[in-house]
Amino acid sequence: MFSIGKDTKFLGIAKNLYIIYQKMDSLMKFKKSSYELSMKMFLLLKSAQKKRFLCLKINAILVPLHPN
Image (tube, rainbow, N blue to C red; front, side):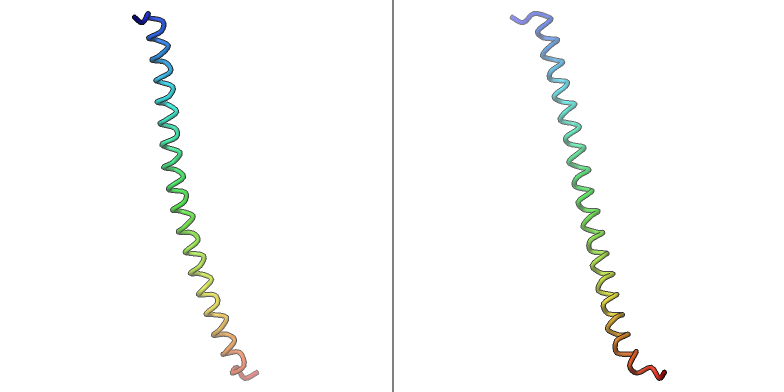
């Protein structure tokens, strides 16, 4: 049979483990949202680089045609 002290100690350990689990769960959700955010930023950057490259190509074509 368990004594009251042992039961209280077990409940304290279980509570601490549950708190740790909640913190890990929220951390994983944050990591997931952080990963999604970084992927969106990467795709935006890639899109901006493509547009910049296209502008550079257009300028390379138009500059020799410009009468100066």
